[in-house]
Length: 145
Image (tube, rainbow, N blue to C red; front, side, top):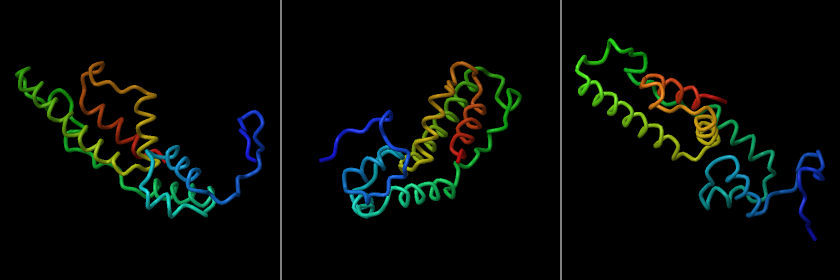
């Protein structure tokens, strides 16, 4: 009978037991935003090390979000009119937020880590009022391997 093992009593030996459906699903939830039923079913019988190595390779080789043309802009690139400037910045923010959200739909480790770091090092546009800072920060987060 299996009993609960916590971090204080768990051994440091590698976990080599082949994964059942529950453990495979748990692994994908911890290293991404879950996985499809087919992906979980394919992982059954594999070891955690095999799955983790595959997930790490996938994260390292995935393309980053393309840098938008306005990523290096400064205030001189925006219209002088504050209304037009605000509209343009909101459009840039919306466009990039959509691209970032769409890239997170891949449910990969890099998406999960990007989300973690963007929440950990809070990148709030309202604080620094510079859309290019938002893009550079998120591109860096998405490229962390």
